[in-house]
Image (cartoon, rainbow, N blue to C red; front, side):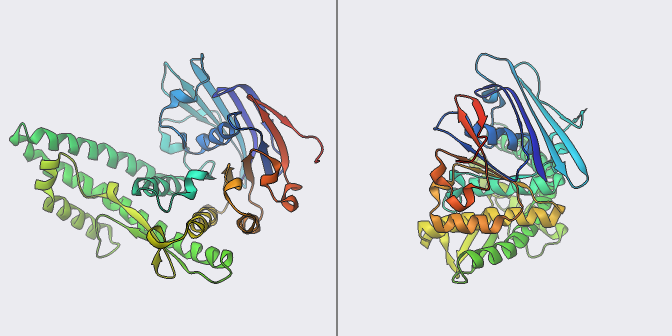
Length: 373
């Protein structure tokens, strides 16, 4: 898929912006705090309905305004998709797909897919487990919309269970309701765990191939799913039973703590190079190469799942990668449409720069360079 048009009204520092894209490689260049990242954020927003930078939609609306508007036109194998997002300080978020308002956010998933790679992702390997869970959730939701629905349901049930655990301390009779929430959490959680197992298994195979090419065969990368609930099989029924048993086993600890200590919200991902934990023993260079392999694997996995390559958004990562990783990155991309932000043209290797359409960004104004210099 290719992004053909982007329209912004009162989004972040953009009063009005309308861009059309013909090429497969687009570079937004300019000083920091000019609005480059805002463009990539708006693109990703139309894929997932949410910003990758903030959970608060109000922050996306231009200062002094009470609403904003984002629209993209995406070319796919089967035709074009128009996606519109309306954000308001007064009303709920509205999203239209091809002119039709959707009722649930999950209905947006899969209409436009993108993989975003930012400096924060370079630290994905060594950051807290919550960041790796967030990564899993974003990627799986785009290719399997049903996962997104179940994840929302899981979080709602978890919140209710945690509230009940706090209430039990004051009202012991409330403990009778715990089994009800345990059944519900186990049912939905089993679906999520199964999906995560399958996703990581597929991702690991692809990442192993890509990382071997990037490292010239010197390193074997293994990505491992580390669930809080250790399932003896991938049968959803077995996972549900073991989930429920784990909740029952930890019940008294949960009551004392006032929160749920086991479940999908405690999962993690492990990365190993040649059998060694990269997070603990890997060099910074190895950790960055793993992050690069991971994002490239996301692209290939989405292609295998959907039959189309997603758009790749590279947000200010070029300056973080050395020349060797630059070269490896572009060698792997092929025909994937790429949007890049950078503070100067030197961030892009000269042999690659000539393939880009270049847009200069300054104080919320975007100008396309007519001639490559």
